[in-house]
Amino acid sequence: MKNTPKRCRHRHPSGVTLLELSIVITVLLAMISVLFIGARAWSRGADRAACIMIQRNVQISVRSYQNLYGYNPGSIPMADGGTQSIAQHLLDKGYISPECFATITGTELCPGGGTYSIDQIDVFPPMGTVYARCSFETTRRHSLDAGVDW
Image (cartoon, rainbow, N blue to C red; front, side):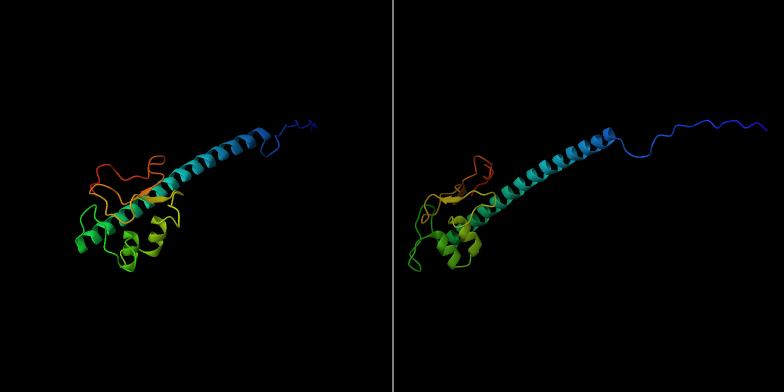
């Protein structure tokens, strides 16, 4: 029997090359950046929705109080507890929570970081006008839809 030399087979080492590793890392970083962009957009949308809900709840409270006590738009409430502030009346009578009161009076910020302002704190707004406005209503579209008749 002849002794034939075995052919040496070149085997590639098992493992990942530097090029493959960099491609995988690049793809993962791209996917993570897309995830963060989407999460930021979702967060802004949630802040906008919360801001609009605060405006809506305050507006409903103002109109309910106005209708219950027979005030007309543009009128001033009677002094109750030493104040004519509509927001203070709403808080005292339980129409809004202390958190909502702090937000609309400027003690706390809007969920998006803005502040609320009230044109005339002791005058019921005319129909179609919002009582409390967010400072971001033009820049970040925290305003209510134009079709809302309040």
